[in-house]
Length: 479
Ligand code: NAP
Ligand code: MG
Image 1 (cartoon, rainbow, N blue to C red):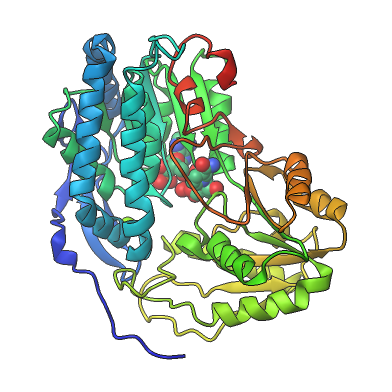
Image 2: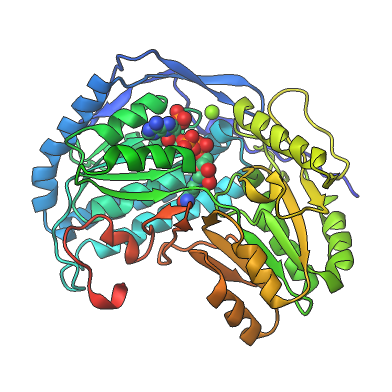
């Protein structure tokens, strides 16, 4: 393998302040909880001190959102759209700054934050800006729900913010959003963008903090709609706590996707899809293709190619433009990945990683492949949320579908075959919200996303994503 010269993106393009307040009613204010720090997981260096919102601070944010709702919801859709288009354009203008900040706070490679996260974030705002003045025409009515309480995870901090805020605002709701504790910085820069766009105060409020802050948002009696993306465990808690309150809820939870490769598939293309499926964003992806199901007749050949390809992945500095695998987001997540991978070995699966140097500081995990995995193994059943692939084999399409569906989750799946009939037959039988064919991890704001079973309920994105933020029933053709 040849060596690359380092090609670091400049971190000087972003101005990180030593400390940040909460964003309430259009202004940055102090929090009354105990401030915490956010670090760069690639170096363990402290990036900034972050205010923590107590239940009382969350209450002030909800009050600000309630007050702003009166004028924001009464504003003609075409006027609301102007703000959303403005925000989308500022995101594009400041995308380099946002991408660097995302990579610093989260650990993901700049290549991904620059070429995937940021373009999708802007696209999401453009897409829903376009809907704001067409809701009535399209039969959705114009009745927003009210104040949305939104809680998001750390794997796609700004993208998850866009998924939550863009449709809520387009439909005339106001929001109180809590970013994840380890990745608050792009949400706080987004708050500055709201100021820059002259968004009326109180329409967007950002309350930083830990799980208790999230619980205060979700449980606030004046929140009308709860939108949560995160673990199935916390999703269950939330479902229980809002039951019977009349709050509308959407839950986007975990996954354990099968990536099925049939013997007739274009193998080189499939190898790229497998790599993208599980090693994109260090595998910190709810819809990651973490279970490779490969037809027995091609298993040896496919695994050889896959291992060769993994040998070329570059792990290291997330700000280097050559980096494929960045840092694991936190020490806690690294411990979880290690624990499950060790369990895989103890249960008898065979572990393999390419030779790859691990930096001295920061949180890292090499790309890892387990073969000889049985369906009962923990690595085949539990979400690892890291760069770890479990390989299982099958002989017939029926067996592939049965194994793919043998999971408590149902978020996504991939099918690799040149035969359209086999692809459609398989996709029809998979219990997954999204099925990709001959590709993986492809997103578009016009396409709905969401799960079955323990992967949650409700859809985000596309026209379906509007329904979560409007009262009344949707037009028949969109159901
Ligand atoms: P998590 O622990 O559930 O955290 C998600 C968010 O909820 C964070 O902001 C967290 O705050 C907050 N939170 C924690 N406890 C809470 C409580 N009791 N009440 C309200 N909020 C609370 O999930 P994670 O480990 O950070 O994220 C990874 C998970 O997200 C994975 O399971 C992944 O599959 C899932 N995910 C799903 C999708 C999807 O669309 N289906 C997309 C991305 C990720 P702290 O940050 O302070 O802990
Ligand atoms: Mg951080």
